[in-house]
Image (cartoon, rainbow, N blue to C red):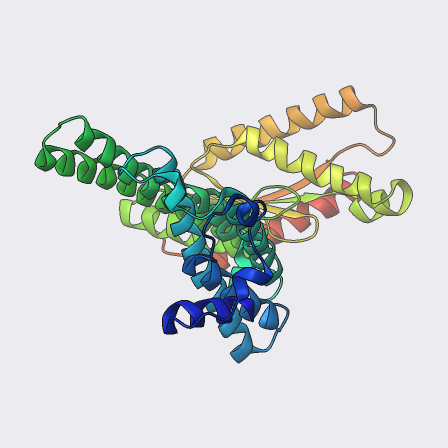
Length: 360
């Protein structure tokens, strides 16, 4: 209300005596002319209106509150930058022509408080989020405030030192382009990394880091089609972690998870990066790649040797053991991935039965 009265007094040239009610400290005794500056009065009007709607979560009123907060922030930034320019005499403005620093500081802090409160409800809530978008905004927000002010102050300084306006404009425009392009590329890089993380989360198993069933099928299908077009053999290997239920029941689920992670690590060491490795079931793993019988035999030998080493190192009550089955598609055959997986699955269960029966 005081801000509205002060604005009306200056607009209509009608003295309401508001200055006599609230004279600046020491002004009356010193015989100085004093009045509330229109920009200060406008700040108080926007502050009062923003406070009315500051806590409202309803959509229509929330938009009003956000708009008032933006307008208030714009006015405060204008006054702050004007004070800085004037105090530094960049444009030849004296500090006496500006809003006093205590008043400006108080209004700025009140604006920050209103913005923080609005961040709980409205448009500014992005500032308090935990996602990648919120982190980007919190990083770029201060830069977007400081950079334009710095650019204009630099322009004024260069002009005051006698540099040509055309060269100054060209230099600052080029600098702005470089900064903008850098920010754009950085944003694109962050968004790309975020997309890749989301992609991996949808295709990878959280416990083992290998592909999940969906990811395994997607990439193994692509590898199979490429092998068939190139006339290369293609192999699917099924690996089952033995006794997982017994491990969970006797040693606990944490130990069972460690066994699964250990199995994934052994498989990753035994095969190439180009091969597709996945956890396709609770205790079942699959490997798909462009290799034939000799490579399969060598890989199985590496797996068995790795298992023996790990059992000797860990001295486990229940040793780590695998049941393995595989199926090979020759270059002249065009089997589907499901057919190869079914054959490898049957071979794996045959191997498991033989191991239990003591044949192997």
